Length: 191
Image: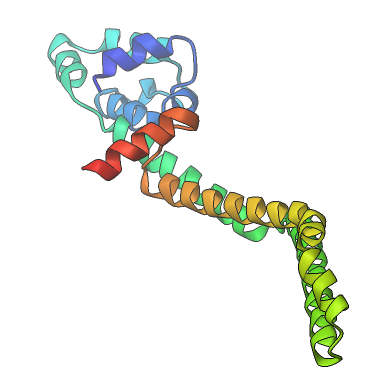
């Protein structure tokens, strides 16, 4: 990115705060300035413009034509941001969703164990009416534990999606959400 483009877009804002890698730009201008005119760390776009105006035409042309690695610095800062977010996420304890999922699993496990135990007791005791009642009551059992099974499935689906999104963000790949994401996924699979 050319220095003049950055200076025009920044204006009266502090370059180091507004432009990722803005310190590189200030340091580059300071290389050509005498010691008594060096720019401070909080130099604005206007300060850089004034400093450039004080330079001889040949030096000004050399620095204005120089390409700066502002984009590379921006990518590095973006990666550091993603890393910091992932590190913060790894250290925080998610408590609500795992708590709900844990107790939903307890309800499902209790209902399944109780149903299977009652069925096994009926088989062992040779109580045909009990076995028949339990095997015919599968709709009732399903209606009782169905919402908990759906809750568990949704919870683990959300975890799977979160992990996929984290990995995509860390690798720099992003996929659109909703219908656009589904369509792009179909086209990616077809290649």
